[in-house]
Image (cartoon, rainbow over all chains, first blue to last red; front, side, top):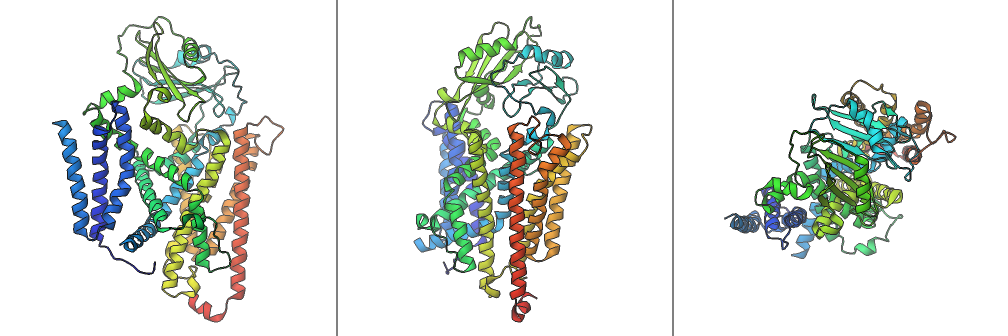
Length: 90
Length: 527
């Protein structure tokens, strides 16, 4: 582990902010689309699974090769989630 | 590519440790103390130390009658009765006064019917509040705790990824190698053996911390924006107040009905909605022994005894709701009895120690990079200030927690509960502040750690004596009637005190030996 890799602070900041927004978006999306007829079950699934997903979003952003790529991956996911969630309210 | 990921995960793991290990230690250590909230409540209330008889019948109607005759409870006031149990052997009546809107509590001895003078649980509440909210305003402290849980989860994941030979490392402890390797091995052993415990405690803590905000977001979307419907789906509909008085009311009857209806369940609490109204609803909450999620709530209409709502998560919920309801029992070891609590205590201390060892490794590595004397962090090189802060905050927290026991027993009862709570809080924070300042003024890491360990050891060892002198009860007065939670608290303090005293002696010896063997060039480096 002697080698060191520099990642920009912009990439770290962007990842933290977007991963938190994504966590809430996943809560909304999972609470709507989780395959259960019981709303309380969907609610519990959404609130618990999104916390685990946050770890994945953070890893995705930090491991991305550049700030632009991190932004592209995370924004794409965010758009998909917001789009799917908005569909159910229409 | 894979090597790049590994390096990045290593950096994530290191930076989380450097930036948050002190805060995570505070949360974890206060959690280890908060595990024993029930025991501490009985320790701080000497008048509540009566032997609990699980078989003895409790005549709730007769016991609460004198309290209710004087209470000013409105139809929309909160009102509940807690049944006696092993940790709280008193019947507790709690309500919101209809006039002042203040919360009132009365404790009744179930054996004699005597209404006891008001007694607080400031001390146990403070130590629990420190863990759940870091003494910050609600709900922000709790959200911070939740976020720290997420950060810790990321740290655990990155730790697993960077340690490829994780199972081999479980059995590797190279005591004859360099100081950095010894600390690294200790860090890995402390991290790998209790890994399932760490994952459970961190995940449940993160969810419980963020629950307030996450569940609202989830409820909003799952119930298509109708948050009221979400609440009603869990707790049932709130009864409509008619304004007509209820003719007869018996809590005993509701308890009997509950025991007939929910087999193997023991009633724990009674919640009353629309008190005194013709539509009054009584909810009986009880616990069963058949699962981790053990509570079963049944709501009865007082007028005719009809069942209004049943909330039985063991039988009626899906897998995620069951997991959701099991978060609190899993996090606070509210299952399996005292042995599970003892196991949580040991594993919780391992978690605290793991955070400290992680910081030490980082500091030794930093010192080695700057070519300080054999990676000695006891010098004024890089990491020296952070080490002193770590010692001051972490060891100081143990001293402050121990001092709070004395504040609880020696401070006068005071007029209001809040006032006494703030006094105890002030003692807690002041002692902690003094301990941090002492570590800073000492300017040497090991002597500062030894001083604070000695202080914590002396305070902890004195707790059984303090209890015996002030209450005439406890571990040192075995001929008196003593309850087990009080004995466990005294004994636990004594054992922890002896460990602190031993650690302090060991560190003092190390310091004096290193002074004897120090040669002139090293002394130059130290300056």
